[in-house]
Image (cartoon, rainbow, N blue to C red; front, side, top):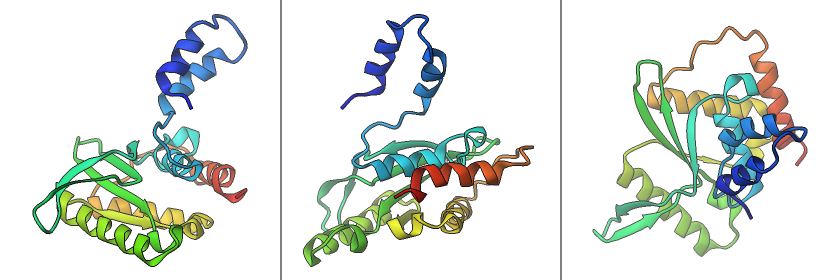
Length: 182
């Protein structure tokens, strides 16, 4: 595995080779700490800027540990799949957490129960919207659009204005590249 810093160091040694400039521009969009290709794909789709076909929700961190107390008052660490920081043009900020639906992604009753318990702890301990997604949801572009609408409505952060007439087409193309082939 690699990380953004290692890639940046490598690119710095490549001087005038073909493709270096676009590769350096792409560095800012690398999402680290993905535990699966699907997590990285979802992060890119939701958070890339409009001109790259993303939904421009904000900045994302994958598998970021969150310290909180459980219902017994014990200090615990929970790690949502995606933590998204949304911001509007008036600098209003909000945080949203996303996880893959445990009933769909994990087999076995105990693992599902543990994941559901974790979800409840996140919702009560962090006091921000928490969404669950499934692989089946991500196979539908309309479902993804609906998820984005729900995220925006739950936070009160509206979409940034854009003059791009082909925005939905760009988003559909990115979604197709990331999810339709699976």
